[in-house]
Image (cartoon, rainbow, N blue to C red):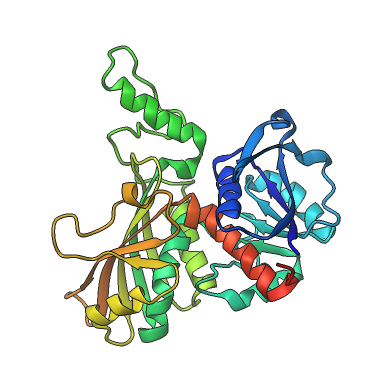
Length: 340
């Protein structure tokens, strides 16, 4: 016996990836609906070897549906998620709307699966920010061993995190570099992204942080431990898919790099590729389409007593968004709904 599942925002990058992953992981589904805005009604989207047509989100009745995976922005989520939740359909939300609500669990299944039982507060579960999701998968098993005091992270985030228009802008600007007269002005980003890096993701806050940087701080504390100190610099880079992070971790207890490597090798959701030779590490191009969070460049930080550096790479459309949402759905099924 399977579930009745709705994917909301099925025509977007993350919505389409949710459908792909539901099929790939053979999630037990009895009935599936793909929803989109009225202007996209009837658009065909893939689900395994099938093609389904999207239906109108505005008129959809969520009564009798088990779970809805939301891949729309905060404004649409604010309108439709409470409707779905009130109808008895558990919402798994990929937007930022509910991440910081103390009554809504923020879940990365490899890190805090027990927190999913808090779903009943509002019938809503939040999916974390893409840059946070991959980082906490690496931090949690290390924290369990040596207790993390402080994290300093610099991210190198691909344009797919900004949506389809950003992917097109990078592509068009890149082509324009080689075709005279075909230059494309920046519109998605405040500066040109092709052959450039932009130290600015989301809006600026009063203290000088960007909202993306603040998200990594707040979400890491909520998912792992409120006492961890986190400081982040988030940078957009001219990569289509795949986020990378350089992470410096300070622990309360000493942790040798060899033990850290072994802990990460045995941790769920992680693949360690860490050879001290040319090419002995993973780059974003190599992680696209994979489920794993890849860890490389594990080494001692000699400037502090208990420090480790590492390089973390993951497909942001997968672990950073769609995969984590489907994993939450699987966890919900195993712990709560128990049909599949």
